[in-house]
Length: 147
Image (cartoon, rainbow, N blue to C red):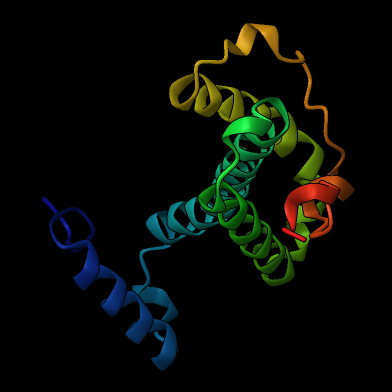
């Protein structure tokens, strides 16, 4: 027999919230609640990796194509930094995962460069050339802000 979780996810979430608020623990769908909570945590890790990938890709474009720099690239770099800092502030337990996220995000950044530029990602460094501090530093690279 199908339950609400399988037929109406939104309805299921509302029902589970009501059960939690009213303290009706015995009626909770524990198995699916656990699965959904774990999924929420993974989504935060994925968002960190995706935002770092966009940031790294645009920093690579900025570094390796100085003659094609644009206002759009500058603002994308600034936006991703702000979003990453906000995500880390809201989820401090993501901090231990930053190094792994950067490593995976670098591969995403290379794909972005390959897709959006004539550069061949195979000719770029095999490891991320930026430190975490550089990635999150609003003054890096020095020529990012127009003078």
